Length: 306
Image (cartoon, rainbow, N blue to C red):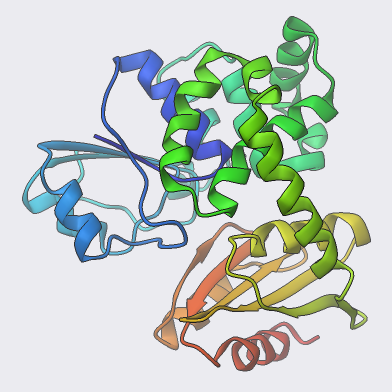
């Protein structure tokens, strides 16, 4: 089984792994869960081997007792010693922009449009500042695409998880294997994106400029908090904090526009509070009990001295 993240990087990483190793069962956890709940754990537990791509799964060690486990990722993580292989550059002090780059480096996979889309999906316009920009440029030239096309393709692939369409996320692995044009011309994904973009624009327009950062409290059952936070940070050139109050939980997200803080400080605080949180140096997300999001945001602001 291949257990992969639901975003573009996770989808394209799964596609690369299929190309390298042949067809396999695809699985993504319930969207929004960076852990396996009882139902998901039971489903995954049916398999003798699991490969985790682009996810730092909470309490992943539970899987080792009943299966062979391999992990390929680029997020902040602690070494999973029971895994047959845990290949994550963070563990040896390096930063890779995407899981697709992890697979490219680990397996000497020739960089192609799948690697490029994973990078663009996770880094957006900042991809142009990376050493891996050459991978993206070569893919764009080969397939006759602009950078806007590449960004559109990632937005389309992400649209499935933003609307909580879990099966569609896994179907997108096979769609992207067919080529960039198949993604760009997908009527289903184009329809998804139209609905999502309208909602994102609505919430972004309500954000408050608080000097050092933008702040937004929103209410949406769709998985758009990361996209809203990213848009605020990228468009305004400031860090952004967003709290989303869902029916059964609060979501917290923070993104730096210039790596001005280390998100590990916030991740550690979330863990001390008993919350599930994770991320990279410049971005962090957490799931909190209902009513706790704004309180946690205030603690983060105090921690960062804003």
